[in-house]
Length: 365
Image (cartoon, rainbow, N blue to C red):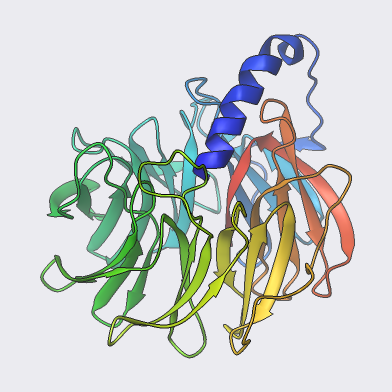
């Protein structure tokens, strides 16, 4: 979720919550239960943020074979237990779906075959978790918002074992996504920051920093093992970190230097950068549309790959690793149940299914 999305969502939710709470009805074709047993390679998990302080985060499972969505599968499989407040991100590792719930300060390990909880990481040091990255089966990093520490955890014991000091100011510090590059972990520092960092995962120390533009929002690696960084430019003119045209930056991860930079128009809102299945193409959202470009391109694309139209403003996105279909999430008004539209690999709308409130993160299984 970008800063601009957060501001808009909070405003919209405040205006519409009272009205919608009295008239919303569930629109799912099926509710999750322990009887819904997926198979690996057959589905997509969607983590729905819910509304901040409402404790209504939920997990939706979409069966790609049956073309059917099941909401609240976590609660259905765990005797009604809630995920918590503001689901943030997911990743699959070691046979578990690791789910970060930001405002509840917890990381769940969930069995993707049964949706049941296997364990959880909690700690008084976990102030605002955002993403979890696995260095190995025995070590994971947990990034945080407004906290100067990256936490180190042991996934086997579900315990926080240490931390990495980023040197940023507490309260404005921010580390977001993380990717592995050999013995190093590369991460973007988003809110109120301008840098990406390089961590030696053998020593858990930051060894390099690189300024790439105001608020690096998301990162990914391409087929040539280059790091791509998407900045949001600050999102609003009064941002104390600065306000500038957003950028798409290509970084040499060895030299940790900028190879090339592409500039968006001032006021643009790019987000959700990710590589396609073969790593040869980049996908991202900007100004309510989905964009696609080859990693070899010399300029940003002139026209969008997908334009949802009809007032739809994409909130999140994922690309299927098996057939390159594109799934685009719509939070609608940020209060009622959201929706996901599936587009074919050539950008044509195929079908749609409903999710929980504010679908914001995807994980393939």
